[in-house]
Length: 91
Picture 1: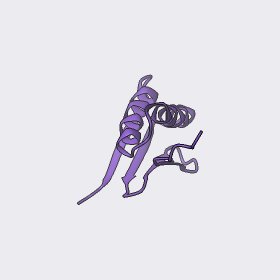
Picture 2 (picture 1 turned 90 degrees about the vertical axis):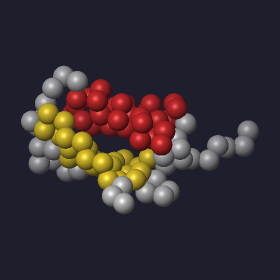
Picture 3 (picture 1 turned 60 degrees about the vertical axis):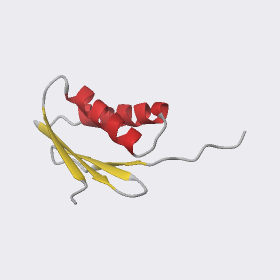
């Protein structure tokens, strides 16, 4: 089974929010807490909006322990994020 998601986003005003929503869903699926998932989504949205290319590509590979998200576009070096569940600390 192919466990890779490819999302191509054209240069529109909404592409940052589309990336954010997609990554939040993937992060929750990876087992991250809602606040951590929202922060991961914001980080990816920031990376997407920082690329001034006509099209940005997000490739997410769903693994057993983590989900890897790679943002590419405009000939810039790819930006990689790892979405993984972090165990809670004892207080």
